Structure formats: structure tokens, C-alpha cells
Image (cartoon, rainbow, N blue to C red):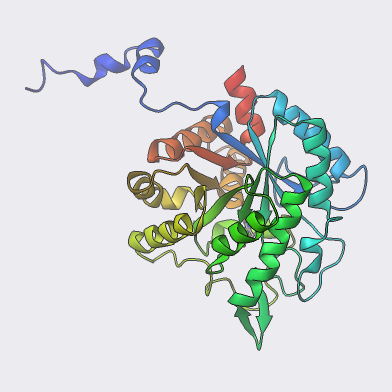
Length: 325
Ligand code: PBG
């Protein structure tokens, strides 16, 4: 039976009806706020490539984290910048790194806020790659040791969740084993399982000063043209190795991957609404081409509708304030 008995517009008649019949809900509980932490004190420096984002020293980051927690956002994701870069990225596993200092400060003063840390060498190595280099190539297996040491340093500092974003093979298993042997069996792993070599990371590489000095990341991050089946293999392997939660990244050009992962796997699924996706909206809004807040909410809803359980987004603070209001 169709028109005129059926009229789809009956369900759109007013805001109450639309709210009642909405299949997708967005709340502050769905958001994770990424933050950048740098060495030093009393620093809150705007990041030129990312509107509304800052480099925080551990002390100012603590104040920011407090406010984010008060807004009801359950978690922050910390990215660190080092004092010094070297070939191995050794500051990545220093217990005195800006990230470790920030984790200790936040967990002490705001224990209810979940602290997730990004585990990757690219901001710490001189060459800007996510793993170690030998003979001009990424040395996958040697890199695993460094990544595991980094995850362990974060766990020791009190991180609730470590999130490896390097895309080396075998890192989840190595990190799980290292954490367990050191007595950190309760530290969870959020794996950047299906992470693509994407142009949408452009603004972030400026923010984390992590652009590769030579070549690109195509030998470790996934090819955007790879089949969705390949993404499912990546995710399945990470779950087998011990990932508690998995991520698809970026989000918007990969909603099909999010939807497929949602159907196939039972672990919590995250999606990363990355820096380029964030800045496209900001720039378009600045140019008067669209409404910033409407575009923000539409994007976050779409990522949830595709099947993500939570969204890592630079909009988190603003979206939370709006959703609370
Ligand atoms: C580090 C890392 C990147 C992002 C998160 N972790 C950059 C990259 O892989 O080049 C991108 C995040 C964003 O663009 O918002 N490996």
C-alpha cells in the first residue's frame, strides 16, 4: 500500500514527533576529546592549523581536562610532543614525557575522567615515521619493542586506555603481553585497527609536528582503495591479539567500513572524526557556506548512525556544551 494511505511526512510533522522517532541519538557520552600536550609550564598555545585547538603543558591541560569532565565527556585522548626528537623516538617511553606528566596530573585531580593515550612514534622520531627505520625501510618487528615500552610508560603513569595508532603488524599482541607481564592487566587497549593513509590528517601533522621527513605512510596505513574485507581482517586480527575496543579512522569517507565493522564485531567500535574533517567544516563555515553547529551535529550523528559506539572529535567540547544546553 502506498500513497495516499501512506504519508511519510506524518512522522516529520513537528519536533516532538521527529525526536520520538529518531533512530539515532547523540549524547555527551558518545564523545572523546583529543588534546595535545607539550613539555613546559603554563603553556596554552593555539595550533595554527586547527581552530580552537591548543598545545597545552601538563598543568594547563589539567584545567582543560577538568572542564571537559564537568561537561560530562567521558574521556580524553592525549597526543604528546617531545622536547627532543631522535632516531628511535626515545622520549616516547620516558616516564618524564609531557604525556606521562599530564596523565599523572589528570588521574590524580580528575580520577573520573578516562585518560586514553595515543601510542605512536611519529611525533618523537626525527624522520617522522610511526616505526623505526632500517636501511631506508620501516622495521616492523623492532618497532614493536619501542611501542610496547611506550604503552607501558603510559600505563605506569596511570592511563586507563592505550591507543596504538602506528599500524605495525603484531603491536596489539606485543603491547597486551608487555602490559600483563608488568602487572597492568587492567589497562585497556583501543586499537586504531582500520586506519587509512589519508589526506585528511593534514592539519594534525602540523599540530603534532609529525609529518614524515621522507616518503609517506602507505606501507603501513591502509590503502583507501583496499576492500572493506581487508579492513575486517585488520580488525579481526587486532581483536584476536587482545584489543578491547577498535577504531575506524578517518570517519566520514569510511562510513561503509564503520557499518561493516558494526555488523561483524561485538567489541565497542570507535570512529575518529579527524583533523581534516574538522577543518573542512570550520573553513566552510568561515566562508559563509554552511552553518557550523548544524554541520557538526549532522556529522557526529551520521558517524553514530553508521554504527560507531563513540566518536573521537575535536568538536567534543563544543558539541557537549550544545547537547547539555
Ligand atoms: C599518529 C596519528 C595521526 C593521527 C592520529 N594519530 C597522524 C598520522 O597517522 O599521520 C591523525 C589524527 C587527525 O588527523 O586528527 N600516527
